[in-house]
Length: 493
Image 1 (spheres, one colour):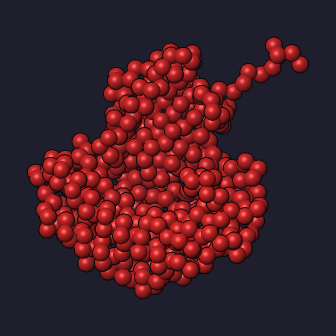
Image 2 (image 1 turned 90 degrees about the vertical axis):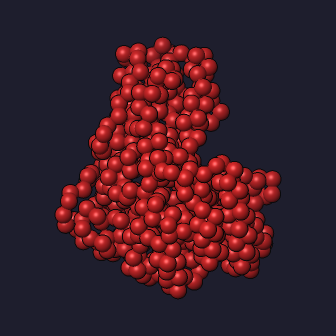
Image 3 (image 1 turned 30 degrees about the vertical axis):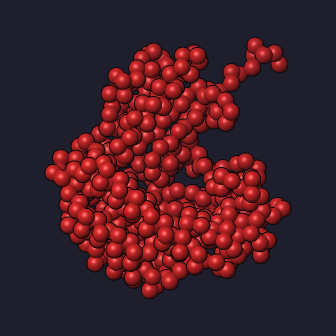
């Protein structure tokens, strides 16, 4: 056949993701939408016809990062006729038309509530030869009803809710993601089953506040029931979730974690501050005693649980005594790891207008003290793992030095990253057992030969270069009231 009659090559795309796990999962939806519309993923070493920036607005430097990246893309676009640039996510929801004003070479701006509009907006921008800015004020369709191209052959994100009903004074997310909307449990379990049918071994249930799940059903036990039901799906080996909120954390969730073999003994629960006064001004809805009580009950039920957290240093009005309370909680809780942040003033949040904004030097000095303490604790907790036998789900690309060290990397059931001696035939998505031989603050090492290696369908898919897809044909937005089916085991900031 002559080249004159060949179909034109599809336009190519690349999605760049910034921010939280919710953004990562949204990017899987964006990739699925674009491929459904006829686009193809751009090769790693080549330019794309469409570049989508999926943004975050949580940190103070988010704006600078976006406009810096847009500046780098401008000469690329000038040299590539027909190239389009789209900006979505939380920063797009916040800045709206400001993005096109500051970067007029951007073609499309869309928000968190209308992810599904991207292909149509790209077509419209190309047809009209002008930028298209479309920001919906409320959720148009539940994101999980959209098609998705998954990043991993062995692990998958599954949204159980979007939005947040909390009013934390430092957080801009509720203003950008909207009020909480819960999916029906049957829809969630159907998506998990679809992933398992394609070889996925691990799912992470995802929401801004996962343990508030069920607010629309008026069922406080809905999240624990969902954990049990998800863990009962045949072929699913690991269930994780992120992130819960201490205010809504209940003992039935601990019972579900401890009593459901597939649910991993890993908990990421944000502390934010150890000072009751700071927590009050943050509007977190709990105090130090309640938080530490949850940690104690989790460890009583699951002594092997790895607990991680988020902490903000330098919240407005934080005194040295307040900060010492945070250090005291960190020392008592002995977190396996912590994401520590210097307070970022975000316009539009109540905290941005509070008195007592701290000098940068004070915040930096406290931050260094906190990270030094947590580093010491993390290292000690990891050294306690020496000699432990661990089951690893082999990952792809988590060990930046693996090629140089002759190792592969995987995650233990408690979420710890382990770099282990490579063995012939081991692939991302396979499962190996090995013994921990060394420990660093942020990872473990297992340098002996693996004790066992189990080939999996996820490993087959990884070796073949295929990824799970979900078509987005589930049932859509939930209704308020009693869910249409009970949450029972099936044969679940």
